Image (cartoon, rainbow, N blue to C red; front, top):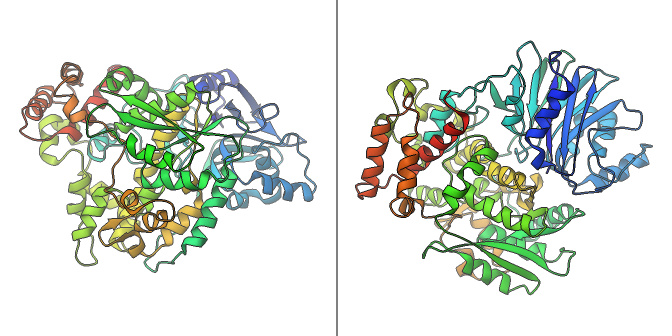
Length: 584
């Protein structure tokens, strides 16, 4: 976990400006910060020392200072790459993973990206060739944002706030992005809720000239196909074990986030064999509200393995008002997903325990149709055509009728119908079977736009690096290639992984109904959070929102005339977010 930022081809900006960019995200890398100017590129870095704390400072160069890099993430196979590069005559100054990038670039150029196993966003500048690249990992585990600058060139950064900190850059809300958030629960990338700021797409890189102009290239895409490739459980076990072996390379304290669900439980079963400490510290969420806590499941898993030292993280309704501003500050954008609060609670506990690296079970749900709404939808679907309107009505957070109640007409008119946007996202994947079409949406939009942001951003705010063995691209590719009958079978989503999990756990745990880290926010805002919720809704910007309509929706929810939890979640987050920005 680190932070990167920089400007390229922008003569109006200085090292001091980039230093301020890094200062905005110094929590991503509290151990040391650095800025270097190389020709028309000014690169900044904030380091969280995970491997070789003494010698891994950045920006980092090769031995003759002709290649420079700033890097966020981890190259898990750096040891193997390093051995190969040393055999070819390259000299190393450290034993950290970052240094392989400068030598691998000199050896292979952009083809180096195919060799990397890991999560990353990095900018590299070559003074001999007078050009650079800005690259992002295959699945978008590590973030990277772009903005064209007044006067030429562009800026990049690990978080949106970095590029917005530059002098002369206006902070303006993108009404289309904000609109989309209310429908999708997040703003689908590459768009953001800020004008002029976009994501560098996962699996992509920019080839950059000295004037800041660039060409964009795609080096990887999800290998979803109709002709599935079976995978034996033995072969998968070897693949997962190798992913964990590589991810166990760190020189700091580590832990496991254990929910008792399928994914983190399978990780626990395999991680314990390679854990190189006497005990494995683990944290599990424990909601004080009856019916919402799942700590008993995490405890059931931990009880099977004596080495796991499991700690409950208890929370109640106070988690929301006490943390909403922090959550939004680190997320940069509003999201209607309140599990951001819960991930932050886990990271707070890990941070307090002196932990830097936290293993988790992220990854399988999107590619294996693991979410319960997909299980229900595909259980009844007949035929080979995906009814987009029916599916979108199920996942949409703010249906048309509610939009007309709480959003002003001018605000609504800034964009096309949300269903049309959904169709555009799915357009490249419409030749696939329905299950894989939705996997494509969730892997390319939902995951990098929301789900992966939770782990990165909530961890970054507390200097915690998440590690996700299932997000090793070799594992993800194997999941993507599975026959659809391995993804949903006999009415069970994520069937392959649940069936694999029977190697370690009983059927009741593996095939229980899917649940997510959650909180009863819909009930809390009727009870202990009612005054807070009502006051927050009153803060909505009247130029974009029908505030009286939003309050009436809240009253209907409180009176039980409908369950408007999802709609109100987006309104509460939007209102707080816009207050933090000031009126725009």
